[in-house]
Image 1 (cartoon, helix red, strand yellow):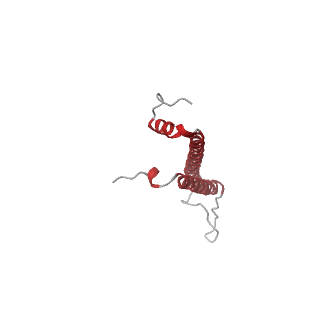
Image 2 (image 1 turned 90 degrees about the horizontal axis):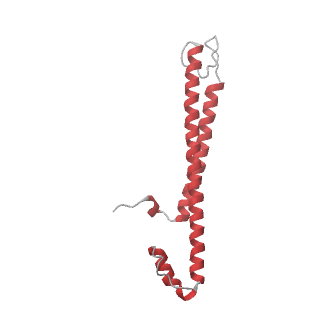
Image 3 (image 1 turned 180 degrees about the vertical axis):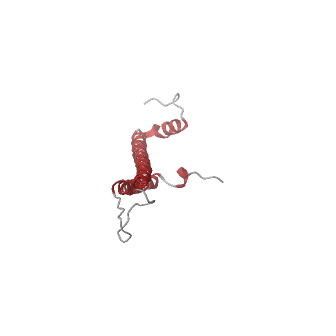
Length: 135
């Protein structure tokens, strides 16, 4: 038996999952962007062996700048991708929330109609709008 993700969680829990995924994606993207700036701006290659070496990969300075620039670009792309994914999860959350609110408003309208509410609700749920009872 196959169960989809939509069927596994109820609507409020899906909304919470989207918010958690969005916030965690934003957080991780800022970490990667920070690592990218670290690769781009921090470079220390002292002349002596006793000094602290940071972001040094090979012996020549020019090669290290090329390698660090490539790494910084990769981290920036990864951070921007996660930022975009976080925005999409946030968009899913707001879409789900607005869909849930519209559904609640429609149910309130149907309940307020009185005796014809069962017939109207069954026709609306089945997609049959031709033989709705007159109000």
